[in-house]
Image (cartoon, rainbow, N blue to C red; front, side, top):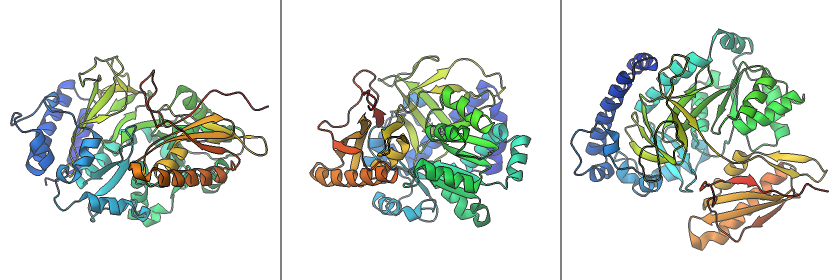
Length: 464
């Protein structure tokens, strides 16, 4: 397997960041041709998939799309390392103590569920790691870490805290744990604060730790910004980074008001890594020299710039151990036709993102306690046997759960696990009074929008 040179990647990415469209297109074509050739020679799945296609491929639209379900069903044939077996990877990820540790001593493993409900397992090789590291240092580092930020971080001791779900091999958590384990002295200054903790406990840990860098889901950051404004949280980060959820204008304004710095935002997934980042003008640029990004309609035909897509196809040009080529994401995005005034020439996009909501239940004492959607999602989705679920607040003290088990014959057993985990989580939040009901209907897409949401609240009357 050909190794990528980090310094060469860095220098090339520097040229492309403000280069011409022709330079970017040439890089994409060259890297796509190399990737497809490698996949054909080393992956039984892609060798069969591309049988009959031209020997050299420089136009990604000539290739058939693939889905998560398809890759997971043929996992052992997709991977290019014959010593990797899905059964061994499943055993590895079943132990949360392995988060951040390399599988077989050389591959990082990330998991995802997405809106299809099919669990995804993705391997990262050293090539992909070299690309992510070099590109992130150059682009996000160059845009976000100015001298004021660096001085502020040094003054505050360099502590960094992230409010993420810590109960699975998710992209952000895995990268965080790897940082902590590879540099033990630095690792003491890196803290993961589980988003599943009660808000008061999250606030307590952040006040004690005093992070100079503060990251988390957009919904969590917005809620903690309100805690800061109301005086319960008292931290002074030099940089605030939002991930995994869309950063609304309302949350952006609230976060800046609370912490005195503009929030930074990135766009990524387990299949493509960090695919995009916001520039200093607050606009999202795609790392299109390493990810081919195709907004398409329901028939996989390209949608014109300025039009919202039905879904998105991505091609990860860096990963060799598990090629991701024209892979279907459920994300709906708009490719913007204009150029950015920041001078970066990488393509601009707007991401529609998740539509889950913060739930607010009434506690026994009468106050409202917020429940973050990704916190509840992580508790329910990581319950063994769950394929898909939807958690719907139907009143101030009632949560209805739609459930689909991976195996129909285990549905009753899986429901018992889901009920216990949901009950334990809500009780931990001070909401032991909330009733948890099992829905008769299975999880389903919204009949009007066609979207699949995991967590939301129905309209209901306020408590009397």
